[in-house]
Image 1 (tube, one colour):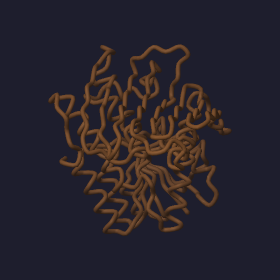
Image 2 (image 1 turned 60 degrees about the horizontal axis):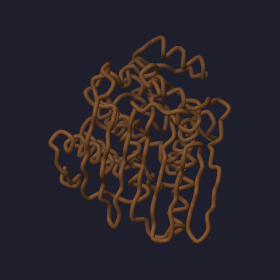
Image 3 (image 1 turned 180 degrees about the vertical axis):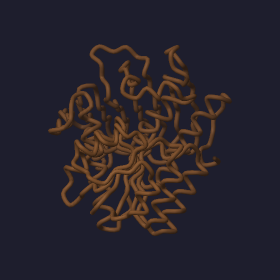
Image 4 (image 1 turned 135 degrees about the vertical axis):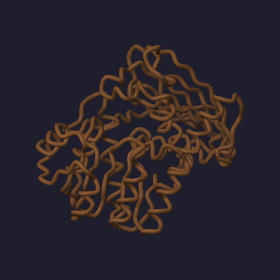
Amino acid sequence: MKGALIGCGFFAQNQLHAWRDIDGVDIVALCDQNAERLGQSAGDFGIERTYADAADMFAAGGFDFVDIATTAPSHLPLVKMATDAGVHIICQKPFAQNLPDARAMVAAAHSANKTLMVHENFRWQSPIQAALKAVKSGAIGDPFFGRFSFRSGYDVFSGQPYLAEGARFIIEDLGIHILDIARAFLGDVSQMSATTQRVNPNIKGEDVATMLLTHHGATSVVDCSYATRRSPETFPQTLLEIDGTDGTLRLDAGYKLTISGAQTVVRDVSPPVLSWAQTPWHNIQESVLAIQQHFVDCVASGRTPQTSGADNLQTLALVEAAYLSAAEGRTVSPRAL
């Protein structure tokens, strides 16, 4: 498979490393409007074809899929270019600025009969996958409660300064991941309520959010914070607690997985540190390789990806429902959006 990548920013470097690690995949073209960033990435990864304009890259062709690693406002036109060009698509989250745009992208990919997957990588972290496998195997019976927590004081703005500038921050950038994890464990959501706060005075959006979700037969709490001072710092770990009819599962700091039922089992599910990764980012970096391998496998076999564009509509609806609930102080049904 030959691929092209649009957007050579901070996080896209992880994607380029991961593509290089996947057998049978070759990134043959790069696109970025920033000439310095484009040249640096092309040199680092030995990619000869570079473009400042995505339309020129699609016109030249010569690739089977495109990895869109840009910000949400550009996704709709880029996805439409990709479907017009007849290539498969993996698109960075947040998938879209709004649900109508997201639905339009899903419809375009469906009409073109091309795979469209959202790069929703948190559920692909190996500690999350280990916990998910245990719950799906029936290790704690039928789940009826979950808590999915990401609380940190890590300075994410140093690497991604644009995060401090948007009217929306933690739910759209981070909470979307944790909401997707909640869906992976407990299924889709019929209603939710949310509260938000801005603790850091130097940013424009919210940096704390707490969300209450009603699933079929279960309730969960999703809480996110970038204003929490912890020692030791747990970034970028998502902590889990899931109660079931036959026991409880916990994923605690330090990647400690505990399953308590008829007997208690404790496991170290620490993610590997890939050759190009660095702590503490190694957890996320490993998940980038896992989700991109999943994309390749799905395209090759014709299967629908777990985090397809159509599936991600449900996660994106939770983001919109959370902002609406926090703004209006009421419970919201994401299905009505």
